[in-house]
Length: 332
Image (cartoon, rainbow, N blue to C red; front, top):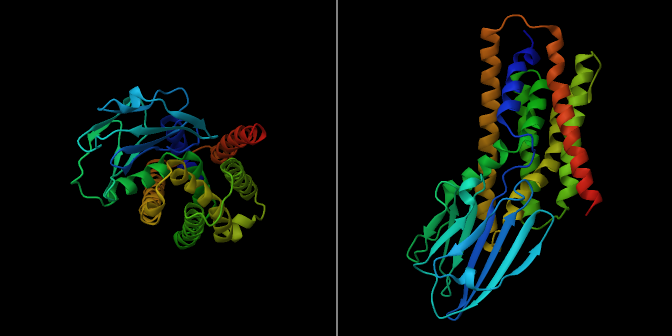
């Protein structure tokens, strides 16, 4: 039985369990910085793409954020609030709570920097939307949290998953598939690092629209392949994976860019995040291959027409995303 037939049920499961939105989970970011013993600057950045209309607000047990007026601004993907607090009280011992977080799937990255240079970094999750600031805590980056952030980014970014799935469908042979996925990994790691470290800057809206186009391209290539036509992606899949992998890397960089990590944290956070992305990608590929094997064992005969379901499903979903993202570019 063909691989396309075996993946028929996988597609149905994917569409039933995933939200139609292609945007990955973008964490919010809270930075509290003691400029000196009498002044504290607070920066809050909340994603609005895919989370619009959801109430999220940071609260400190001291009441600073409730009693003080913030300076508000917005970008295309985030709402930004900033406070300047004049006080002789330290942030140590206070409790941070993110109101409304329990009703979302968004994490909040929190960085607290004391006036003596000590810094702590934590991730607040919907299951436990608060924590007590303790200056004596270990100041190293939370390795497992950054790894998890990368894993969640890829596993909830359905557009990236559909691109990888299209590669699996069009590439035959395990060794050939390994080369293709390796090329994709190397490429998006390059641009992820370049964009996150500030070496290259490309507006996110055109990148997101181009990612949708890359998925449409593979869907069309898959249709042509099933029609018996020679296709470039079939002959040189690693070239296609590398070229579009560069593009997808800029999309991956959006997760860290929108968080707004402090500059001195970016290199290590980037490494951990990228390892998480690769881990999530490997988990996805292994899951797909397992489903292929199971379908091969369970199902023997399926109608020939079912082979057309995956490419047209991928193509239609990507086309919707492309026009949605094109509209965002138009109204910028």
